[in-house]
Length: 154
Image 1 (tube, one colour):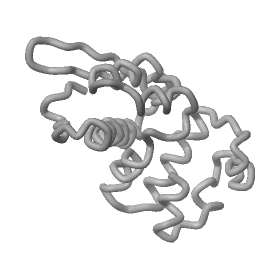
Image 2 (cartoon, one colour):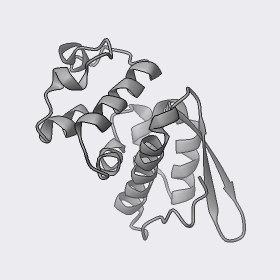
Image 3 (cartoon, one colour):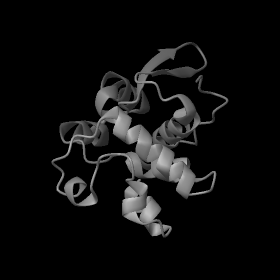
């Protein structure tokens, strides 16, 4: 998200204001970011980047990501069902702000998201980010048609 905001001219120190985080620490990869810090970063991003596309652009950059063994497993998943099961069972890594649950019926796959830490005013941003990330994952690695919000239950 920081790279996305920087590419649009937002200064990193303004983006990180009130988070307790410093860019120099983040790039080392040794910082554990709390949900509160990440939610503040999201709020700052929403204020500084005026546009409805930010959550979608951020979601497109999330996966496969740099999640170690989970990244490898997602890249090697045999089908969309396996990949979605991995997303849901590893939500603390893939989406720590939202728990994911998947149900299947005869016609649809329903993915439900549950708030795990009080995302409140950032709910739409986080949901849009996750939907874009899942949609991007299906298109890139499984060559399937786009997932529509109409076929997924939020």
